Length: 239
Image 1 (spheres, rainbow, N blue to C red):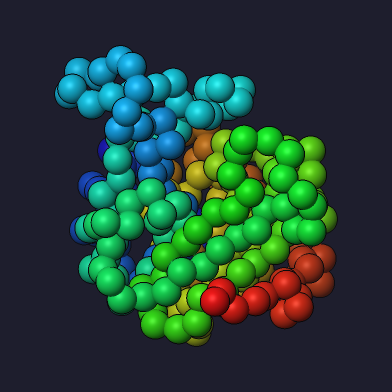
Image 2: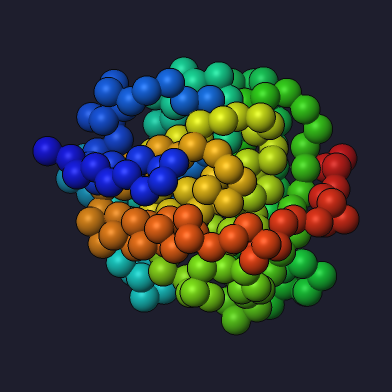
């Protein structure tokens, strides 16, 4: 049985989103960063029980707890039924996406030069047609711009910065109720609360669910003046 917490305009579910989905009320947009299989590869040595090639999860290599379901390819089909969907990591499962929509990019280095073998950019797919966009904000290694972040902490292996998620909610337009079925530490919910929108979040891992509850509760108590909104100057059109 799932646990349900109501915090202001946010309703948070602890459980499997696939089981909870049929009972949810109407939502206007899905904004999420799903477990898209960064611990799964098509090549390399070693095979899992299903015969697929596998390697250690990137999260464990970086010292974080592994993300549930991140050891297999992600199926976006259940979420494509919603009219307004924005999903990060979509370059990992783009063959399963419609040909329509647009791409959003997050430049995690800002104006810095690359220095390691990890990606400097992340991509999201948005189901609505429109111009492709770039958001620039340092969020890599020690070069993290934590201004305005909840407690200045990074508590989840794939945690997105608050300013990025505020920008994402601007991209989905006047969507009043936002659903994040892979809530993690709750940054999408914090952004929704700060923008005066309703939020529904689902998280399967109790540890991260508790973190999300705390962060969203803190956000509900804080005046919006403490949140620095994205500046239009960092947004560019992809050619």
